[in-house]
Length: 567
Image (cartoon, rainbow, N blue to C red; front, top):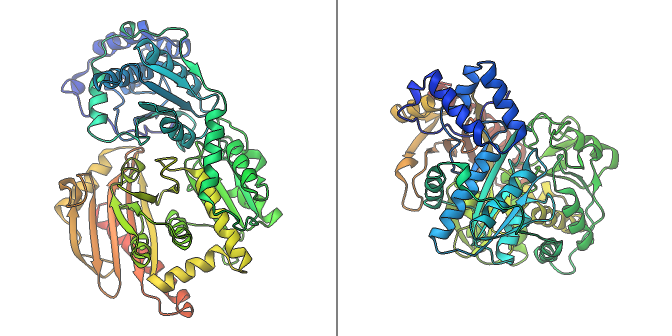
């Protein structure tokens, strides 16, 4: 079993004193109104066999509506993702929209190909219709960016995407956007959560059998037409790619976009090309996880393309790999920060103006590139819900493989348009007899080698994360890897430019400059530490020693930070 991938709810005053009788009463009340025969059977079995530990895990709180809406493991009970939880969430969202004067407004709903996604989407459409709003369902499982695009394209007051992105197969989730086409931010999340909490019984939520619209392909066609806009008319389109959809919903939309653009058809990783909610070939359907790209690299060795592209299962992220004779297997995944810098350099070269934005955990190289190009630059809190809201945004990225290259079309990360843009860049370089790695080298010589890494600790017990954060707050490190900590910020207090968030930021100086950010993940039981070291590079010949230095420093920072956090 996988641990929950949602932060636990704040402890109810009664939580520690939930008796077996309480649990049973709650479980039976839930069972009485559960509309899904599958979860009813599951819960009935737990009650019948007296599985108190399991009942406690499911009934000692509720999934909290927050960062990414809802996300959790599928199953019966308020601490799991199921139709009852989704109907409540939809009813809460509908009540919120009506309280904001949006009665009669359109809510557009998209979904991926995970277990129960289509059911959750249909339930949402029924609840919206029953509440007096208009609802429109996308025609089939489609990438999240198509939903984000559809909200503004159709003039909707809100959008819902049913997806758990790159979480394990047993999970699903519920992501909410408002009419501006961006994901919700405070205080909307808390206001919607309060409306959800106010729903007493599912019997109070009208769910008609019909009355909503199922859209045709017009929205998808409009989105695809828009994808062309990220490319320069007449630019080279020669780069050859291997593509994996990671068992998700990206293939048809990406291959259609590539065909429209006139790129060579991507060679598909056949075993991962079609949607499959079991994700049979990967332990974790996330291109960043070890082993997830193995089949793609195998395909690349057979066809020798210029680059490998992967989407995550809902295709809002884009991973890129390049040939590298130095590594075993001959292919290297680029870090999100490397792709982020490459796309920024490409946009600057194309004459882009406006603001370039990134989250605080992404590489500071973007700031250097923006400054040199004379374009605006902003840092935000983690997540595209913040990046997408930057005034005058022209380009935004986050190190976790998220890129927004067409904010006028999609105010969220979009793995399809990012794939087009990086393939255009690879084509431009190919015509010059150069590669993506050559351009990365140029950026390092121009701005210093910005090397990034992550220390990510997955836990079964969430108190490990709380204890590590407490240890660092009580005894902030004075040096890391021999570099002096010149500033230690507790981001819970907020800064001049950032609202409060649970995180710590350290700036280090000495022979080199470095930066460390530590924060609990918003969507998984992980403590994440983001590290960056900047090593000056005078000329291309200095790159190899600079990389070696950066690698040693990052290893040492990881070691010292782990010790300071008591990990």
